[in-house]
Image (tube, rainbow over all chains, first blue to last red; front, side, top):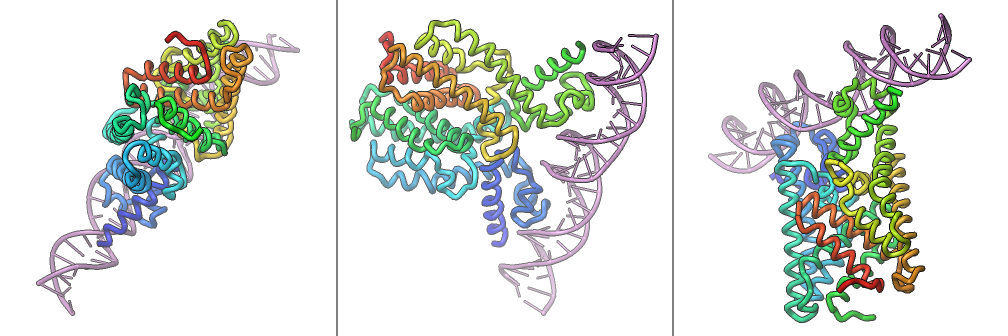
Length: 199
Length: 199
DNA sequence: TGTGAAATAGTACGACCGGTCGTACTATGC
DNA sequence: GCATAGTACGACCGGTCGTACTATTTCACA
């Protein structure tokens, strides 16, 4: 039982470090210290650095599910649900209590030329996420909230661009207008897809 | 004279490493070995890791200028020049001979929560780049190629989103359609700004 | 309350990190 | 033609990395 609590604490501190420093910034020594544990005590939970990284990515995905997906799914199907998801998605890490940026987004650029299980795991998470965006968009089309001619794949692709641009301008450039820019871009994307929007 | 050649070689190998592994992946030992130099011989050129990083970022900017900006500036002012720039910008690292991705783009996500001169340098480069995009867009507006109501800042912001989304989908997800998606997104952005487009 | 397993600590390892040292060699300017 | 500055070398610094091994503590349950 104690073990479970320790593991939760490790994932908590590890996720914070991951969001700030990226995958390569999470080290066993620092994480052990942050969690008030010895390096070997930590090692007993994750038998390798790789397993720790995989667990941290899963924890990030779980947190995103709790803070983004679940509340969004309570909105009515179609456009409202899609809007709800996107609004909670953009900038979700800080609302979820993370001190840094989105772990998956930074990993997308950190590991783009690497190989191995960690990269594959992120690729799987990212594809799963895009599949969710795709299905919510398709649902909005099916319900007549968006045009039937909408290129759904293209829609999702551009949506991801908005997310990444927001991440870069909010977190790196520290542009206070990032939120507004993202919302305007999303509105424009919806308008192009034929959504009925207030002005 | 010999010194100059060594420095060029160091920047060359360093930039390759930077594009593949990111800033944290460039280490003095590995770079020295790649350039067939001792670590201390390398140190004679760059008196600290930080100075090396700054020099590498400048070299990346120089390369981008040669491969992206200069050829684009030969196109007629206004929309043609803007189009020329964007077309050469998207995916420029591989066309410039780099084995990895865009060093600035990955640094935008790698250093978003850090501090120091390196971060500031990247911020300056990025702002300079966005200012270039802004001025070319403003020129296209002034010449009547784009609507006068165009929100130029917003236009540039979304353009950066297209660049980042292309980077992620091409380099990480290895989606062969990345190029097409980026072009379609750019065309849609131009159409929204009132550009006269074929079909 | 005693015991065995689970959880954690302790210690050590080889490799690599950024950086410094003294020392050569070599190109360049006076 | 010689002083000087730049360039490169190999050895080495203290520190941290991931990982392995053994010892100790903690705790649930008999």
